[in-house]
Image (cartoon, rainbow, N blue to C red; front, side, top):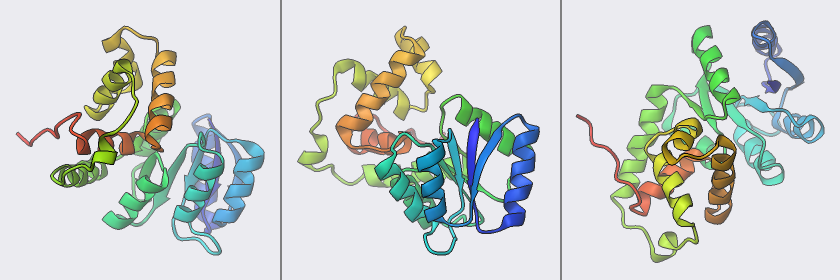
Length: 218
């Protein structure tokens, strides 16, 4: 993959860049703040941006919103020391596809990048559980009439339901006897019609509107 690194600590960027190159990835640009990251994304169109939260001039969450508003197909993973729920939920709302903690092991980072390369979101099991808990809480609140309105096709409803159950695009394709390209096409339509930015928001929509019911712990 072609990556941009955005972090105000040059030493951290250098360490991550060294690992990425050792794993066969290409670091095409480095930024020390969110505005620099935006400019690099405009110019370089990377496959993935690894974005810190706390940076001068423009923090990572604001930069994520700016990039997603202008270049919505850009994939962004937050890489931070913060495990606060508020930062996690704000990152997902801002459009980030992943949320990684800086104390993660090298092997976990490599697995995460492989997931991104396969087109899947990246969250540690612990952080994913936090998000699902929040979605379950939201699902207990009644959805508004406006929230229930959509013009998804029956096939798009099937795809969304499988996404909400945790299926990958490859698993959805196998389940519905479709190609992964067709699943990607349906996902883009779902995001566009429902004004969503990522799979996590799609899960939230599906739970909140009653398309799926959160699984209870065994």
